[in-house]
Each structure stands twice: as C-alpha cells, then as structure tokens.
Image (cartoon, rainbow, N blue to C red; front, side, top):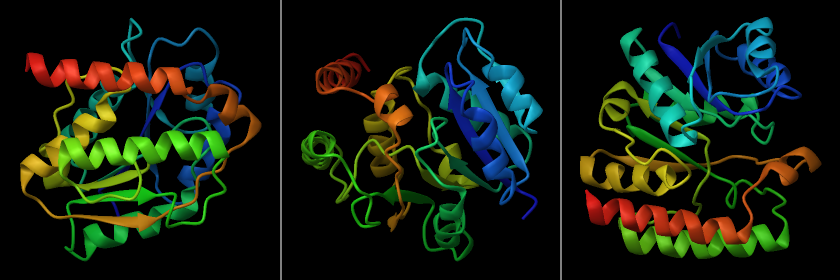
Amino acid sequence: MAGEWVVVPAYNEATVIGSVVADLRTKIGKVVVVDDCSGDGTVDAARSAGAIVLKHVINRGQGAALQTGLDYALRHGATAIVTFDADGQHSAEDLPVLLAPVYEHRADFVLGSRFTGGSDVPALRRLTLKLAIIFTRLTSGLDVTDAHNGLRAFSRRGAQAIHIRLDRMAHASEIMDQIRASGLPYVEVPVRVRYTEYARRKGQRGVHAIRVAFDYLFGRWVR
C-alpha cells in the first residue's frame, strides 16, 4: 500500500546495508535509512540501493535514529511503519505477517517474536534474551515472548504514541512501556532472526545487557 514505510537505523553497516535495502524494496517501496554518523560507506550504499537516507551529524544511538525515522515517515503520510535492523538479521519476507494485524485493525503495535518463529538462537544469546523477557514482563507488564527484537510494525496511531527519549539501546524497553501506557492493542507474530557471522560480531554482549538495563532504569527514574 502507498502508506507503508520501513525505518532502518544504521551505524557502520556499509557491507550489508545495500542488500538489506534491496530486499526490503521488493516488498515496500518507501525505505528510510537513518545513518547515525557512520564512518564508512553506509550512506552511499543505502542510497545506491534506493533508500531515502537521513543523517545524524553526531552519533546518538539506535533509539534516536528510530525516532528520527518514525517522525519522518509520519510527516510524509505513513499509515503503517515497520522498524527493521540494518545488520541482515531480519528478512523482508516477514513484512506481510507483521503488517497484517495493522491492516485488519486487530492491533496498533505488532511485535516480532523469534521464539515463536523457530529462529536458531545461539545458546548464550538465548539465555540473555530469556532474562530480558522476564525483565520486560516485570517492568512493562506486557505478556511478551521476546525482547529487544527490532522487527516491529506500527499503525499510524501507534507510531504517534511512541516518543523515544532514551537514545541508545534501552529504547527497546522504553517502547514496551509506551505501548502499555498507550492502552492501544498489541499482538506478537512469529518472525525469523538469522544469526549470521556478521550479525554475531555486531551483536550485544551480555555485559552490554547490564548497561542497557541500567540506562533504562535510570531513564525511568529521571523522567
């Protein structure tokens, strides 16, 4: 549909962003890549593949990049928005599954779940995520089966309810809080996450998860 947008936050993803954008554009024509002050060829690769590219002049973090992209898509008439990681872990084949509950008016927020989608999650990552799921359920009150999965869909109304203030990785928990606070309906759908060697090198380590939890809790306290 004409009002569909995909928002892709990116930082130093020159080696994969072109193929990610090309894959997305087989399903949705409007792809906006928000470059978070990369030091490589991410901007050129994304533009060459057909994406609209927005640039942060300083590195602010994935949360800030997502909010920049959401704001841009809303200003340009988006009726549905998908957020999508830049590292090649996600597949454009999951977009119809994500968008279906929005178009069927069943949900304003659609959350991808790798654990109901049969993803082959590495053992250490699985443990970290299971702890994150418990943390998310306790802090947000949402009954979810996955956490920190960047593959999501929003209706226009849902996207307008999201105002990310935590610039870096703690934004994922903040989004869950705002979904609950909005009172709007949400659902989970099964998606596949591909743990390529490149994605594993780029991924969050366990110690980073502790920092993310601290940033999130501190952010809640100062709000």
